[in-house]
Image (cartoon, rainbow, N blue to C red; front, side, top):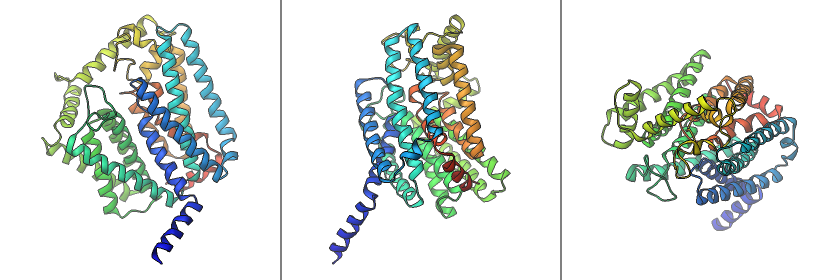
Length: 415
């Protein structure tokens, strides 16, 4: 009898679309993790392409099941796609004078593979996410992060100075650090707005563990972004008299930071990276390859801006100014604004600032917290990756390209 009940429950789950939505959520997570890969190897394009394809298939099935076509074809989506198309055309025009048009074309292909599937997937996710589905989503994230934490604690598999690969001992701290920071901020915003109910002690433990994992991974730009956005959320919470939520978040920040810094020797590499950043900010001498590399990238960017300030060196051209085809990490400046200025010139820089202004303005019209959250991908973009791999912006773009009715409903749910 029990077996028959289980079979009946399984069939009911399939009939109600649970399985298909479960797989859709998994494809969202996988694409979010793999989309920011930026080493421009054949294996990276294959991996990104596979997960992008799976996401598009899964999202299209959900779109058909839940009859979302009319909502995805409204004016906001059409306007956002038009702006994206114009930006793509602008990038393509710069190939005519790019110092490396071949690499520029690779970057353009990377942009299309990285952005469009995630944009589509997030749009479908936002339109269909309910509280029950949200719990399933967080359960999936919890299982993935728990498994990752075991590997991180036992092996600390990050290659801070070398290349990463699809193996258990050569992970990218940049990709995982960005992802964990994203999960932390989403969880915090869900808790602060009571979208998902957690007891205060449970919320504290989850937030503490996520933030501690962020420290352990050692992505310095990610730590700065998470702390900055979190402090802004604390300030906003106090301004809205949400004292309980603001105090809990502030306590998490202070406690997690204290635990990380007063327990030296547990994760030497991550601790040394954070200490080096603090020493560097104080003007003290350090030996730190990534910081030295970014100093060099800044010098090269300054030279390019000095010699090609208006038009830049074309999309992909930064690589050939000094580093050439042998470049691994130095294919781009690792700073969104420097990349736009060096490769796309003043017109590209103005487009970048205009788009960011419009995004922040539109998010502010929905809710101040969403405006604060938008600074997370902006801050990350100042420390690592290139334009095609700033894929966390897809979350924001998907939000803005959905119908006004959906955005008004979201506005009512947020404090």
